[in-house]
Length: 350
Image (cartoon, rainbow, N blue to C red; front, top):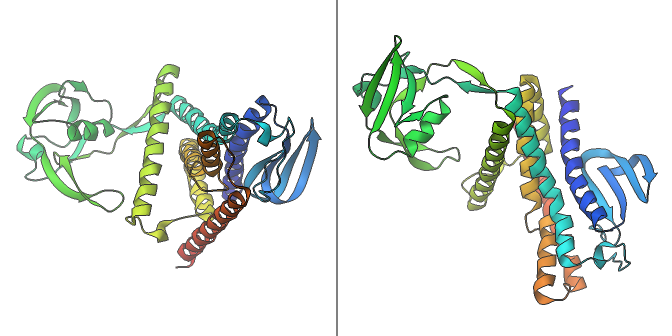
């Protein structure tokens, strides 16, 4: 059941991506010959208003085939009025960008749904005070509830870290203990630690851990829009930084995962609950959007790069060079797919 849900979600994310391309292509009068969910042999097809809508055998992708544009056959060009090639470079860029944008938009909607359902938050109550820490010296105790820091009201534990990290000088902390408000002043220590990518870093700490009590934070409609925007932006930054660290060699290549990893993690999220599943789906959707914008021929980003070249030089790329770069892009993508699948299988059988 978990695998079925995973494949269904992955197919939906890809469908939304292709729907972005499809919608803007239609807007500019481009004939879409095929709209397929999945690759390989076509299992079900429905021809409607000039487009063949298909469900294909391999549910691990999808594509929109526009008239005059075929990644598998880059030489297939048409300059008819309703073809992709007849449009201006700016219009083509809009069509290409619409797919990744649809993924960002979908993630935004998913985060809005999460905000309305409710997010689990840790209560700002102290569960442990480390000996000889700033909190210990300020005589903070287990069970103290942090009400505010430097005049900023605290509603959840995750707000504490950000305020401490961005603070300058001392911290004016108000706590509630035995129904009494108590003011404390303390100065954070600097601790050497490692970030999520394994790099040495420093952070400000006061030496406390949460008690572990949680509550569900539900956002109003307007609040959920702000929440969704911030979460989509945070997910995008996280993925971009992760890719940068991988290129720099900080994140080992053995950590690269493929479809098997996605299916496995999504299955686990599905068993955890709807919020976890929606959150992971949003993260994967953002990931799809960013990866498709990479300037690799055969990806949306690669085609955008070719069209930017045409806008600047006022001439289309050389056909032979264009074909070679496109085929090179396919080789790179297939190599990455094989490598990530190998990593997935190695983790299963290790």
